[in-house]
Image (cartoon, rainbow, N blue to C red):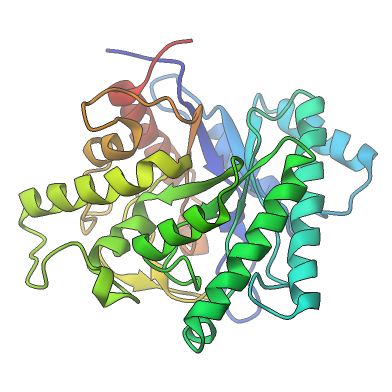
Length: 343
């Protein structure tokens, strides 16, 4: 049995917020998410850290330096590190008005500065901040060419801001965001941005929908008559998808998907996150993680030093049960045993 020490295993805190709220279930507190993460255990192994969304009500992006120090001390006190951060860019839009784009870029500036301070305090283990276009797909589709140009320009400016704080930006591969809604659109955006600190965040649940051409049938990879029982076709589809996107990937989420879309609260429909042991899950998580963690020759890329579980839009009764997080950690450990390394 190989108990490697890399990649580090992280849990996400933002599922306590995403898909929650007045039009759904109550938000799960930041402290509760931390407690469930810190308490999780499988064969004596614990989570190494958390990835954090920098948005209310969990985190005040404008908190003082003393507040950031208290946050760092709280998480370090649970024997956890902080990894990737999520910038709260949704008050603006990467393809919106000049004012809206400035709001977007300012959120990136604050988030990357916040991240630098956490690194200086010794509690943060990487320098990646996640973004999306904060642009509704239907609005983007009204003028794809010009809207894509606006997204690219905003991302360029955001990258330049992030570089001032030695941070990189990871564009989230999720089908609900305009200009990022298909694998081809995502690559076109990344290539056009052309910044050394711009990369891709792959989430196994979301990228599975890229294969099926949801929101972009012309970019479908799997055949129209694809049957989920055809594992060889799924393997070939994953090979093609990851060959294109893996070189851009700087952040990676372990997740499960049942081949459907789902949204809750104010969140648009996107790839459904399923529990690690969901019998309806279409992915072989441990096997399929290899397509992102290893190159075409089977060699580990070691392109990122931690992997994160993302389980947005699970019911509160599921998220508040410790067994849920123990099962998730078990799957994460098995991924690392199959595709890990020592440093």
